[in-house]
Amino acid sequence: MADSYPQIMIASTDPDLPRDVPNGYAKYTEFREMARGIKAVLHSCWDRVVGRTIAMKTLLPEFADDVRERRRFLREARVTAQLQHPNTVPVYEIGRDDEAGLYFTMKRIAGENYFRVLQRLANQDELTLRVYPLDTRLDVVMQACQALGFAHLHGVIHRDIKPENIWVGEFGEVILLDWGVSKVWGLPDADHDIKREDDSSDSAQWQVNSLATTGEQQLGKLTQSGQRPGTPLYMSPEQVNGRQHIDERTDVFSMGVLIYEMLVFKEPFRGRNVKETFARILHAQPKPPSVVQPDAGIPSSLDELVMTAISKKPSDRFANMTQFIQALRKARHDLP
Image (cartoon, rainbow, N blue to C red; front, side, top):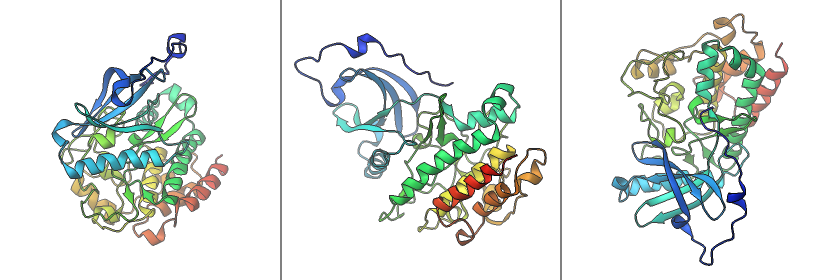
């Protein structure tokens, strides 16, 4: 696993509180950089009041006076904080420090991103095949869908669903990450937060080592080194077209693409470059998963679910995540 589960020690549970309890940024020590993006950096650090290791994300100093980037940073922090669900990351604090600038702290999760799991499955790793049979893989997706359905009921569209943004732990934990480009009801898309090319920024890769190349480079295969533009491969047709008004059905499409990849270890719309990938998203009709992998035991109900989810027209997809989850339950029941 990429991160281990920290030991709880008496030294972190029994010390008395100091008379002057530090607040805000002052209570954090032992900073260790975990990931650095274009606009923000993620550290692990020690909360010496509570006695635990947490994760802290800070906006880089060069963007401190950028109104748009501050707004997006705070939107990510607040959306994540307000979506309190078992499959999202708890946010502990949002603040500003004179030297560090804007920051927010959250639970430091242990495990690995789902793309790493799919890589090993594609390479026929025996241990991963035993740990992640198809039923377990569908359970991972189901939990991520529960977080999405919860978000949709609160007026939030994720807009960046991909395996890299799903985190899995050793004890069945599933966390849906990265709400940095989410669409919030009542918020116009005038700032074009939708990514039309591989803008694999910090918001898309916090708590994950960078897995993306620039959008115009060749797209690597799933079984190769993991360098690929994650975002374009899962974008819905309406995102590719740059429509300002999208709804939960764009997340349904992206989740359908993810499940397709999970079943056959191949993205349904991959092209030689981003331009060709976008053209396929808009016009190509991929073969059903069971046709691509006839020996994988994929039931017809799962075929139907995936192909409905990745329909070109939003009106032809599942109307909402609740319908999608119901179909997913039925497909799991139909597994051999």
